[in-house]
Length: 220
Image (cartoon, rainbow, N blue to C red; front, top):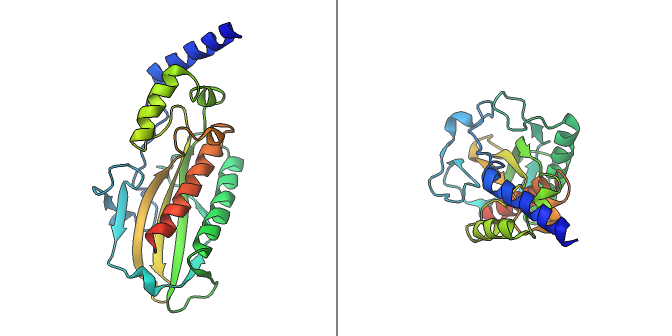
């Protein structure tokens, strides 16, 4: 058993040395998203979770209803899905709709008709990175992985060999159609979220959870 542990540890140590950052993909200002021409680098965000943003001065408290449009799976050439299957894209899209519906319903009354005091939210799933099988979980227990993940935890960074999700969000005044806010987001689980390291899509789904909660917190 000890020999097996040493073997796994050596593999993870090698992965840590070779791949520190190789699972890190930086989002772009996706050219075929409706608000792309308005997006600017978000210098106020040091975390890298929201690298591009467009914002107007908006009193979110004046909105008490929300329309969540069907999730769009991005087809532009600058997508960041890699070789992800259409089936996995559809799974993430469905999960995103369910999770954002739940989160938004905690703050707004869900409606289907445009009217006053109503936000219209459009989410575009633009990419995702899957977990690295076996090694992603092993790196949480191996010494080399623990050092790297410990540093990343302190800086709210990505864990070693962990997946992530990318999306664009656009928020409109439903009555006028005016764009109020738009941003590109990259979300990923905390480095020591073990459950998010098991399964190809679990980290991307955990990222969706974080993104949904972050959006509602912003709209308080």
